[in-house]
Image (cartoon, rainbow, N blue to C red; front, side, top):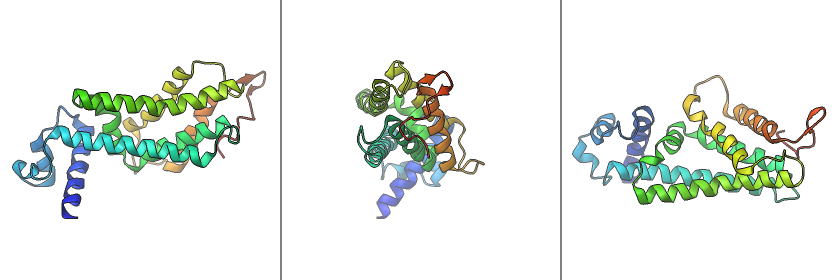
Length: 210
């Protein structure tokens, strides 16, 4: 239990430093200093700075994946749940992970390319699989005429770029509460992909944000 707690403290300190200074701009000594311990003592708990980065990125990737799968399961399968419902659920889930731990989310979004070649390739594959969840829902929406006939890959990249942009400005002590932020982003994501009629966005988007 003590070891688990110390490891968490190391990862938390590293997350803050990696996000503020970047992975390359942070040394093992910086992490140790933030914890008020000697640099040599840090190696009793971790093998390298690279392993600390891997732990942060891999754990955060797993959280995003689990949240997305839970969101889709909770929304219900197609065609019972419309594409609007499922896309909004994915957006809310993503924002929930970002706002729950902005430091680790920031490292995941901004520093994953600093991983070693093999680990970077693994995360790249998982990121693509994660994005595929969005592409699939958007493709379903296009097929049913709910969403505009756009390239699903481009639309998914557009939505995820907006979601990941939160790491640059979101503050836990800011004026916007996470739940309100999630609803706003879900609404904006739907407006971005909805099919248009002569009066504007379709109203029956498959049960969008409520």
